[in-house]
Length: 155
Ligand code: MN
Image (cartoon, rainbow, N blue to C red; front, side, top):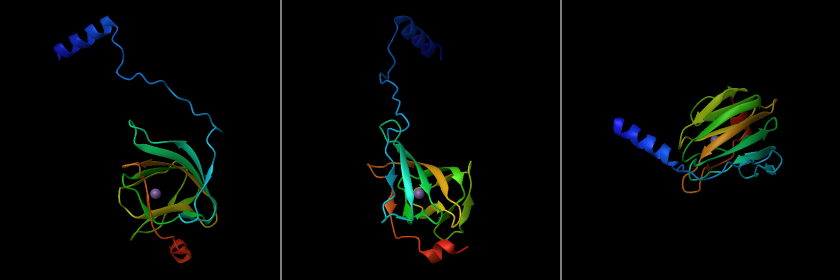
């Protein structure tokens, strides 16, 4: 312990440069065009506002996703999992074999790696969530079949 402290002090006295020399980057609101959810991966009107991409330090991307009433993702899995932070409206999330669960603003959902699930708005109220999705080898999602109207409206 004493040795580490002494080394840290001597580095400070020598004016040692920090290990990370990158500068802060501000990505201004309005500089990242919205993207429509691709029809093969979503049902209904879905708009994604990109927030940040994966990088070597934080291998996860983030986006703010808006689902119109009735809109939802297709079934899918994430190789490194996903965190959903609900910011507006009322939504549903369901994993395969489980019940449909209601999510509201302030709720935070953890979707573990490899677990098949979907998320979206309720039938009558739209929903927005921030999605933070881990990336493995440049990939963050494996898309599957659409959520049928029967599955979506089931309890
Ligand atoms: Mn997901």
